[in-house]
Amino acid sequence: MKITRITASAARKVPHPSLEYASISTLVSLEAQMQDGDDPARCLHDLQTRADRFVDAHTQQLVNRQSGAGLHWKSQQATEARSAKLAAKHGGNGEGK
Image (cartoon, rainbow, N blue to C red; front, top):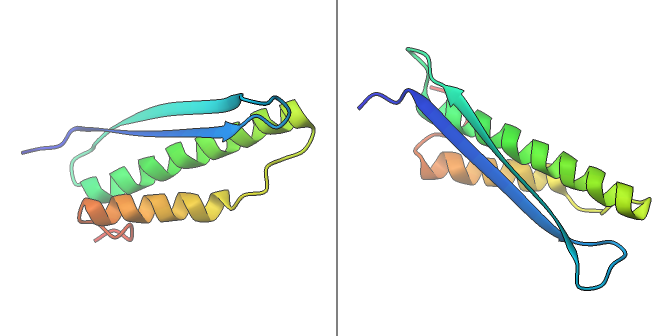
């Protein structure tokens, strides 16, 4: 089997900073074309990391806009943990081969 295209998605849903019973949601899906010689596990890891970082940044931006302040969460560590878990699931270690 030859993998020619990969897709990665990420979503976040956080409580609205000032409205009770409301939330802020962000979803993104990214797609990439594989080139000959690309490592599918590495490409998937990289694309998933990009999707996670985009969603984290966009969600934080929306929260900041709504509250004037930010959520204090460890988004970078969460992104790295999700990416490592995905890479492990698909047989890669995120380090390339």
